[in-house]
Length: 407
Ligand SMILES: [Zn+2]
Image (cartoon, rainbow, N blue to C red; front, side, top):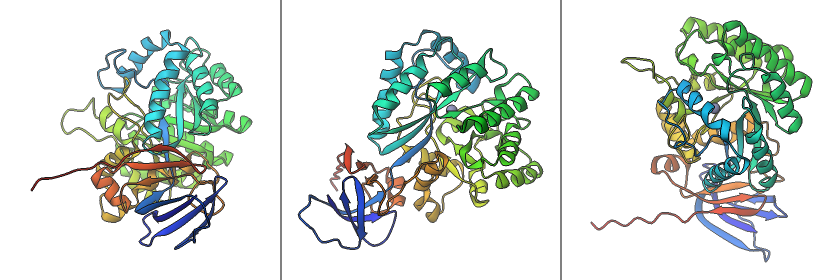
């Protein structure tokens, strides 16, 4: 196939893209037609496929199962009741619904956190099956997520290790939910030691609280640095960082930069969950995306929750996630908005340790076409992904909205 007239990643000039056997063969200002099928985009933006670097597919579409009060703690309590009665078909159906919605909006890579602190392995089994089934449509990475704490939940270590043997890609953690500060530190030591011995990825729900004494991150980063595995370690949420003093941040930044770990911010969920114990003024509870980015650290964005006890809305649309992140992170210059697609594309690919990602000759022909000329307009006008190409095949297509005004 020959795709004509695309603005690749906000380039001001149009390009043609020649695809052969699912691979990008040539990118040039003009590629002559050689008898292949032609798709003329007529001047639309092409970016690499969206990467959702943090999503809970086992809990999705369960918002009506139990009534949450809007805090992280209430969400966990609700899910503790729900997860006792899960069935494989229930988890599968809800997760598939969420993946379809995300794929229809341009997502092709999802890192999902699956709760292993359960009386059964139902959710993990369902997700491992779905991961295999969807591998040519959407790449799903599974993190074994200890929702109730590694040292505070009986047999949690055995459950994580068994999940890795069953096919999970990575190890999670939740230091701010452990019973004590010592357990928090112990859990981070365990996660890094296990990652070193197994080669697994690491993605920790780290300090997702407004409590400025929650400091799981310093142990995670220091141990990742010592082990030399920073690039496959991610710290998700880190919302306590919003409340750290600048003096502590100055000390913390040293080990963060040296470790080279990745960060995942979840703007929709954390603007909803944080500040719930505050009177007025209520803190935003958003990690310091701007400062981390300026320090050269990798930050990607995740949807996190779709219609579950932690967040009643969401549909997997990373443009919405970016839109919220730009607002609460005060990243609203023209350039910041124009380049913000990177939080859910290149930066996400780095967090997930993806290889061969991006629109380049020799890479798989995987990209999305947005209904705009540049990403500034995508964000401002909430434009849709018109096409999603995965290895040269169209896996999702959306008709552009048509608006008519009569004046
Ligand atoms: Zn999460």
